[in-house]
Amino acid sequence: MFYDKVKIFIKAGDGGNGCVAFRREKYLPDGGPSGGDGGRGGDVIFRVDEGLSTLIDFRYKKHYKSERGQHGMGKDMHGRSGKDLYLRVPAGTVVRNEDTGQIIADLVTEGQEFIAAHGGRGGRGNARFAGPHNKAPTIAEKGEPGEELRLELELKLLADVGLIGVPNAGKSTLISRISAARPKIADYPFTTVVPNLGVVRIDESFSFVVADIPGLIEGAHTGAGLGHQFLRHLERTRLLVHVLDVSGMQGRDPLDDFSVINRELSLYNPTLAQRPQLIAANKVDLPDAAENLSRLQKHLSGKYKIIPISALTGEGLKTLVLNIGQMLLQIPVQQTSSEFSKVTVYNEEEPFKVVCKDGIYYVEGERIKKIVAMTDLDNSQSVKRLQKIFDRMGLEKELKDAGIKEGDTVQVGKYQFIFYP
Image 1 (tube, rainbow, N blue to C red):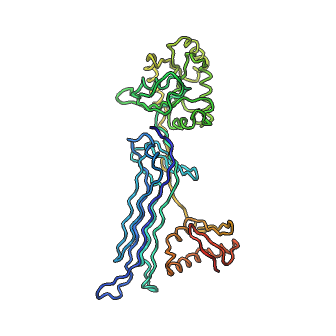
Image 2: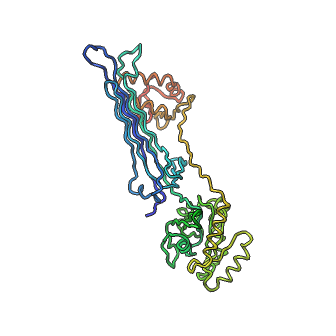
Image 3: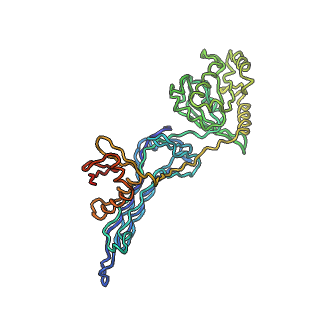
């Protein structure tokens, strides 16, 4: 089955907790702190696999989680890092943040990798906190939570040429005659319900990929006839071959069909309508085709190259393929941007903000949320250290400026505190 759009949830592994431990060995009665650090959580990584052509693997499993880091241990032993989780996707996959709609990766080349969610840092053990003023610390950090995201994966086929046209214009028959593709062919509209790819070889040194896009109808740009699901597969093509039925057997006017389809392309994405087009005037072997072909040439031959063909009998197909090849040699290959940086920037001047809602003061900011999440709130020394960090960050001042009073609730991430000046 062909799936070209799915939604999934991913979570990178949490970092392992740091350890609180002290050396207790013979002849070393005061051996000092020896708690090791926790290991780093595993990342969630997308990798392009040329053996895949659909997103069906994500159809039945929606949640993915990488391994968390191992906790630190005594005797200064650090925890093992969690294993990364690799998710294989076909070339042409666009990764989008479902919540913001932002594209975070465009994966187009074999073997390309992208870290979609980074694992959390391991917490520091108590050996890290030893100093001249505290030689026996009893505090350690918890592991940093791994990143979690709701993603939308969208596959846009990688093809040089896109076959467009109204339903039953003969696109599937055409691709079956010029390539090894074998789509379903029948004498009724919307026989093709998924895109098909075929490789056309002109000679030993030159070939190109053709995508047979299911038939488009008026209103396709708004989703009519599943237009949205089909039109996006044209966005990576360099050349559009507009297949027009010039036989008039179905009571259609090829000039009207040409105008309708190009209007839909323009409304969906203006750059598609400006893409080079070649017209394949199909079904010239049928009666009344000559008159419609003459009208087509009269109105469009000055702007577009028109190749009369019969996909059924093979008439004109060699000429069509040669013209497609010549046009592709003159059209530069599109440079698809595949470099998306996913960087969280912390503003040292304003690392957080306070928002009051329904009597609760929410402290928003990734940096301060991570600090709280890595604090062992059951340990009094850790809580005192957290309070000092809050003081240095100016949190109490911000809360007072927001109108907080003694006894009010403060929430940082998933943790709630009672405010006392």
